[in-house]
Image (cartoon, rainbow, N blue to C red):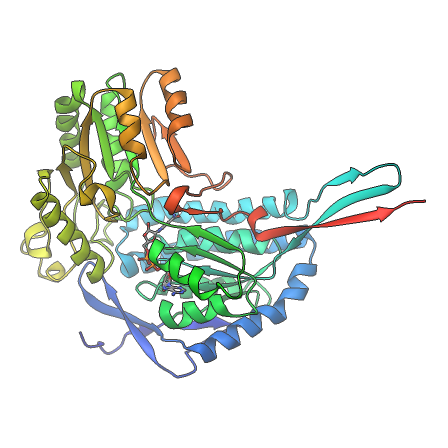
Length: 492
Ligand code: NAD
């Protein structure tokens, strides 16, 4: 598809300057609702990477030397600024990856604002706190908590403002300087956000550079001037980064994919569970493109048919397709053409494997928004439930990352637990029950970084959010972006 005239060009943010790539090369950005180009971003290369790392390294000593209170004051000012720019940022992310404006404005923007204030508090509470121990009669031991240095945050195309904030706020609070590398498939919100933030911070403290993962991402993670990498993305990219840094290892946070079970027991409040496993559990979070989306719905057989009816009602009542910029719309397209094709092929292969479509299953603008020419080439997929009888199918084991969930019946608690843990992933899990003992048994036994009971998907950045198994390790927290140095002093 050709670039249209009069597109807004967004730029890199390097050393306090808002600038194009060194080569002047650009990439097109597509609005997934329409499938049309709506903006351009810099296609950066290793020359831009050098300039960015130099900027972050140069800015580091002064930023690290600030007191935690001084850093916290900057972070609070960033939080304050979102009141002014929140609507603009929400609209940009909606055009960038299709996340409907209603969820952006009333969900994500307030959440990221709070994250800056929380990070400011954490800077003071934990950012510089070490330990003290008397080691024998003549030795005092203590630790200094120090910043790590230059932190690179590599982010995916889903949930860009949220992921940018969770990494940047924690790393800056810890006294580090930061480089954000957004996905080449959705960079605009990050570039504009960086531009707004750099007006508040000293030059070089926060930088944003767009480009491909293979060129810019790889050059950043290999760079000797980079001290820590935090990736939110796929297992495939985590493996590539681990391999390319094998000769020069550096600490990593890996926030990767999931195939999260959302389990409904017969003693649950079924009406609440029906919403919690469909609308809230997977479908309204960026059209199911959320790492912790409950993409495997497990239902006890005694309430299976009743639950299916309730789930259908919830979806029919709450899912409203339409213009992503209209605040009535609750469900948007998937984020890009590549993801659209991947999800559609899982809907087809899931049926070939024996799955039965019990809700949805259709895709394409003309099918879902008939007569609305504007959306004919958009990446629209209906919320889809596939009933399956075994967890062994490919659609049950591989991350689809879209509005598609499998529904699996089970008989006993033991069976539910076995199915829940029968996955290489371990990011999230939901348990719907009125039995407190059962809830606690499940919390202890599920192999997952996060467990929700009688709710789903709520995340408080006051607490860690991380994965187990192939869902990754580490968390984006202030402590994670600092390190302790141990000191001993002899006293005569
Ligand atoms: P991706 O791995 O393809 O890309 C993520 C980022 O890595 C992009 O910025 C990309 O340019 C960069 N990258 C690619 N190759 C690289 C390389 N060799 N070196 C350095 N950087 C490189 O992921 P995606 O398709 O953008 O995002 C979807 C994935 O992200 C899903 O698996 C999803 O589950 C996961 N995700 C996880 C979380 C979480 O918190 N656990 C949150 C959101 C998304």
